[in-house]
Length: 313
Image (cartoon, rainbow, N blue to C red; front, side, top):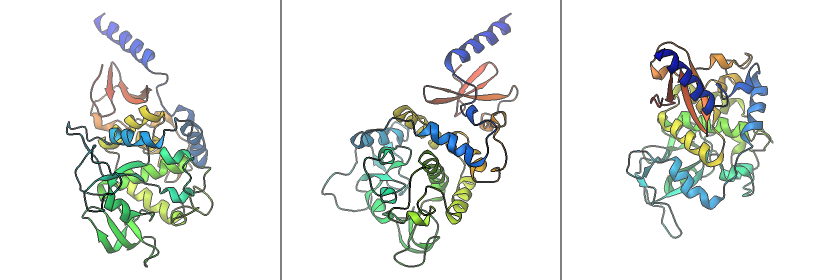
């Protein structure tokens, strides 16, 4: 009787909290670009923030969560408090202050500040001012001949050219998957945009589109596979979802990149095949992902866990 009550309580709890067991159930049976199109329809319907609010929103999303008020910087090894944001008049000394960085440079879409990409937190990150300046609008890739480094990121000749007008900016290995998944999100949410209007967007995308060229796609898929989703990314995705009402699906379901562009692009998506909870280390029964108030949970039998594996019920 006690066990039956527990099961019934859990079923009631889950039914009350969650609208569906699979957050991407609407992709069931779709393949390749049809998955991307369906995702885009959902993702682009989000709250567009003001640029002034991005300061607070980005620093909240990138808080290290260790009680120090320090934030993540994926361009440098600098340790910044969330209060160290750049103002006017600062020099470009290393580790002086941090900027709001569009990891997909705004010049690539023509620089329009009225575009939703301008304040989309999924690709706006806090970065050291000097590193941000060095990155400029160069494409993300891998550097063979280093012209500048801060010990974390590198600028030089590599993936996208071998002269001073065709530089490549390489982030640290631990963040390469993060950036790949950010770019997958941008190319999906804004698949109807033109990301080759300026800067060096043409190095990454096919002319007049938000479609990756083959060189960039192969590289970013490699980064995605070699640097799996981290707890940092999961936490950030949850926080951004609360701010603007949409999620990066490639953090929730990394295999979606394979279904759209990679090894499974000719395979129909199956919700039942996307458990993605091996890190919880709990045996039967099978787990399901569920979404509530912009936060992703795992339901396994009578138990409810956060995506990090912490039991909440």
